[in-house]
Image (cartoon, rainbow, N blue to C red; front, top):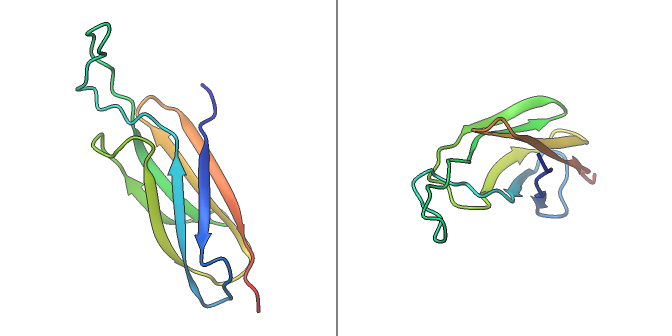
Length: 111
């Protein structure tokens, strides 16, 4: 399986300990429901969708989501996180075919 492209963005760009930041995550994934057909072959496109997303800080999960087929292609997820110290935000995801992926970004509060 090829590694999926993913991105984490922290907003605002400048923050300090005690601030709440928005953690945005997007991953390139087809999110096929298993209910569509290929226009050329007329065969059903098998279901292939992300079914679990976990946001962690320094290895400790703080948000876990269960996802269903109806989420759009290349899904975007967003959560809020209260900054307590420097560390690393990691987002792990798994799809219904067992494919796994992960993306991390360092939190660097000022002050």
